[in-house]
Image 1 (cartoon, protein in one colour):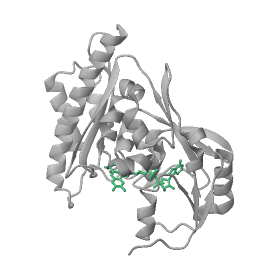
Image 2 (cartoon, helix red, strand yellow; image 1 turned 135 degrees about the vertical axis):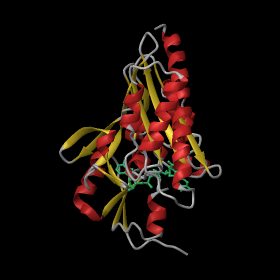
Image 3 (cartoon, protein in one colour; image 1 turned 90 degrees about the horizontal axis):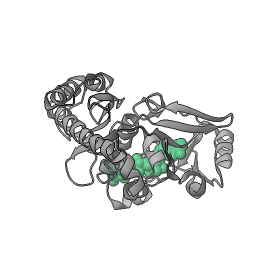
Length: 297
Ligand SMILES: Cc1cc2nc3c(=O)[nH]c(=O)nc-3n(C[C@H](O)[C@H](O)[C@H](O)COP(=O)(O)OP(=O)(O)OC[C@H]3O[C@@H](n4cnc5c(N)ncnc54)[C@H](O)[C@@H]3O)c2cc1C
């Protein structure tokens, strides 16, 4: 049986308390939220924290999910299930529901959190791609106060973020734009599994129907970053025709660098990157058109 090494446990009573604990306990301390990534790593002794700082009592401060006129705000302690079931979130960022319904299983979704997913920074984590594509900003609290950084700067590398040892992710902010929508397409070996490869897309249409802005990202197809800036740029200024979308898919497949492993060969994953990018972009475009009609624009 795999068991974690010895550790001490502190239960934070508020954000300031949590940050104070992280500061006082130093680099040997780790935050625990849902525990679905950290505890398996502790059992395998891949993570050996001396202290766990449990933030589950901070749901009052970090469990918010608010759709505002110009942005969407999600607290770090929003559970996957909450993000999956929110009609308000699905209406403005449908990519969340697309992704959440294929993240793990109900047991993991009941407990795993948006913040934990992002802080884990696993290249196979679905929400990393979702939040990168949506151009999210991370809100971070440390002893010096609150700071904000773009999702693409938050992700430093595989399993590595821009968080210092004494900082807590409070949540994310996603800008809302007119005539904009998003989609996520994933292929996994069996229901509830991690992605073999997945793709996310956000599209903003100009009034005339060309693409004004776009974000494209891949899950589990690169060693680190989820963003595909070159493929996204390919769309901007273009009519989103099948020919354009096929070219964007081809670029995504060419730009990624998957590795062969038990989930599939690198060649198969490249093929998926191309195909899933096309599906996600196609769906995001159709949804952006529908959003524009609903908004009367
Ligand atoms: C069987 C199984 C299948 C899964 N399948 C998928 C899948 O298909 N797709 C997918 O994307 N994910 C999958 N996951 C991962 C799941 O989404 C986890 O819930 C998620 O990765 C971590 O969230 P958590 O709240 O459990 O984080 P925890 O395990 O508590 O923490 C993860 C890391 O984040 C840090 N942390 C957590 N919250 C904060 C915070 N607010 N501020 C600073 N640091 C913080 C912790 O210190 C730790 O380093 C799966 C997990 C399991 C167990």
